Length: 375
Image 1: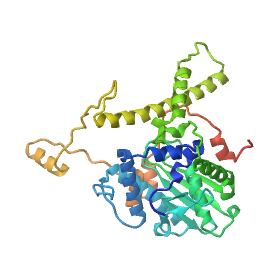
Image 2: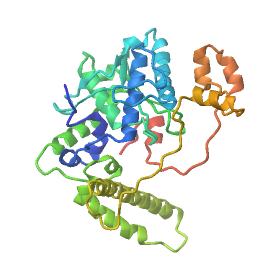
Image 3: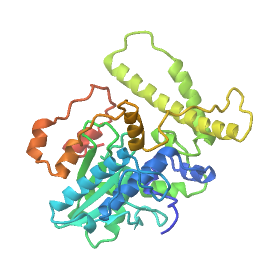
Image 4: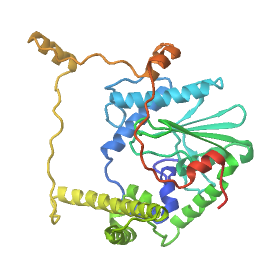
């Protein structure tokens, strides 16, 4: 297994939604990595280095050329701590886990394979699977298509019946604010995802068949071919009409919830279309083409020191000015790792509640708590 999988688990959700996105992605590949993607790759490298027992530090250069920031190292440290603590409870070390090790996923398709961030089998026929996310967009762990694909691949390499296996899938996402915190878990019997794997397999075969169907949905935002998708264009134009059809009266509660959900989805379709066109317009304008009504402008970044912080502080001090920041304490988790007793940390720290927000309820939270509901 080399290169990039045509049916990558990271794209599993998008393929289920839109089998035609596979050919669209191949026709319009991403030519250069975005800064956010490069930062995420560097943070992943830091995390894998820690799990392999190697030290990393702020300012160190990752293989992709990105220099590790304090935020990247802290995120990787949280990921490492979760893997280490979880495995230690079973008498294992992080070096007992398979880190960035590829798995084939034949139950989905012979061309489907991927690389889980970390996985480990522990006594009792339990599979632990970790996915480390550095982005800000919240990724839910429950019924996550990427994790389902990985679990299928992990099961294909062992001589166990799926009903014998307990799966503990965990997403570590330090920079996304979620009600369940930065580490979220989905625990289930492996047999429970049989239907999901069947859906994935059907979508994969549709994707590689002649003239696969394209369908719009939330995953359009991640498709590199969205700017050229006729289906998305039509849906976006239709969404403009829907968004413009105001309801100037006090709707009943049920109707209000339905319309709000419909308009939110229409807004997501519009956003996917807009961002796709923005990327194409920027690329063409940057090449010198005239894009009617748009131009490329050079922005200014935030002013920063050219010299190391210690040198700046020393020079300012000689001139009688103190420009050093006040010292900051480690985070509570880092303090525990440094040796401060957990009871002391608990007495001096808390986790404040965030603001109340309105979130869409698709029934997945109830299913994750009470089990699968009949459909």
